[in-house]
Length: 242
Image (cartoon, rainbow, N blue to C red):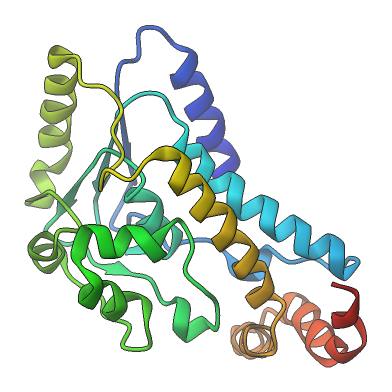
């Protein structure tokens, strides 16, 4: 799916007729986030660390460097990277059925998608820590609006129509790309790079490896779970090569 929207972004960026983009989901959910269990493969530790850094950094760079305005239309629950990437766009409109969850602390990993600075910029330090920390605050649409995470809330039946109106106004007014929060692109790119390295460190840490093994085993995804078991048990041997 990420490859598919990356290609769609490339086409939209190159298409002279496309002046703005609406990024949304289908069905009841906006996105369940990245499939963490499917992101790690057995390979040399140093190479694996580099792959994680590159994968995470490139994912959010697609949003950061996109040259045209992006309106995110959250049509239901949004989790993880789907929330953080939305804050790298121009504005967020949410259905009243939406919720926003970034369970990084519970997973034993660090913030990504520039959320270590974007959340505090948009919502204030207190609400940022509520979402990113162990409290695991999961605001609904109205709470996200009050906090400053989203800019509009609509009944789900009206979401796509209202998103079209907003995007059309942007086109009519010649609105140019402006990332939420007003932090300079160069600074956000540095944050993305730094967070990606920290995330790779956490991905190869004991808490995350053990947690993913347990989670996947309970889900009866035994083949995937064994990758994390091997990485976890053999970590004392390979961590020195990172």
